[in-house]
Image (cartoon, rainbow, N blue to C red; front, side, top):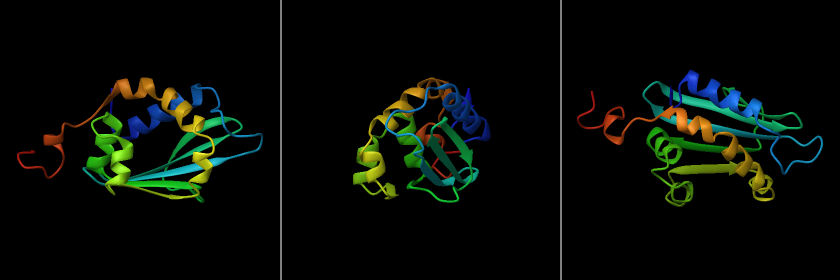
Amino acid sequence: MAPFLTDAWLADVDEALAAAPRPRGLGPGDRLVIQHTVTGGPDGDRVWHLEIGDLGARLHAGPAPSADVWFSEDHDTAVGVASGRLGATMAVLSGRLRVGGDLKRILAAPEILADIDEALAGVRARTTFPRPDERAGAPGAA
């Protein structure tokens, strides 16, 4: 089991994506790059990007040279959304999850995110998440 947002977790995500079929919704030669930034984690900020194209999807640590879409949130929000304790829609509506870029690219092909979500089901089952009272700086946290 890999702890959320660690290098082992990023590698697990990439391996799952590499083994999955190419997500639907992109035409031949199309490419979509989604960057994700999580701030304020116990090990500092984490940035990675997902590149989706003809050969499938891969995750890369670090910022993308050019992202089509980006997501940004604090560590607590990321843990909440990834663990299922907080809905992504509520996180966006409350301003805790910020999105930007060319959102039409994703909205025009919702199956892309659905296929990525399906490919990562096993990773979610193997991921360990801190409990809310274990987060860095929380009252009573070690």
